[in-house]
Length: 123
Image (cartoon, rainbow, N blue to C red; front, side):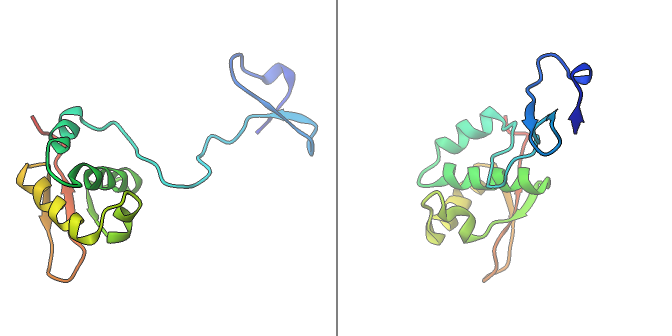
């Protein structure tokens, strides 16, 4: 979006575009990469942080996918958790801990990635 001096909004940062010889607003979209979208319920994080092993890390991976897909139910692959140093075995144990704590529900078949639904109303 190009703007003239009269069209510029106060308090908004503009950059000079050499090609058009005008000030333009920079793109507001992220330039790619992974992100964690909030808000995350604080009580959910507190409960997950008290669980053993890599439960909090796996919980954060689940929340990342929930935010990225805009769905409360996701498939949790091993590669999603690898960036936080979680092996597939630690992921399986953490999922069991999160389910036992009432933070997620699971539906899955043996040999497949689990379908995880996040429980947002924890008290």
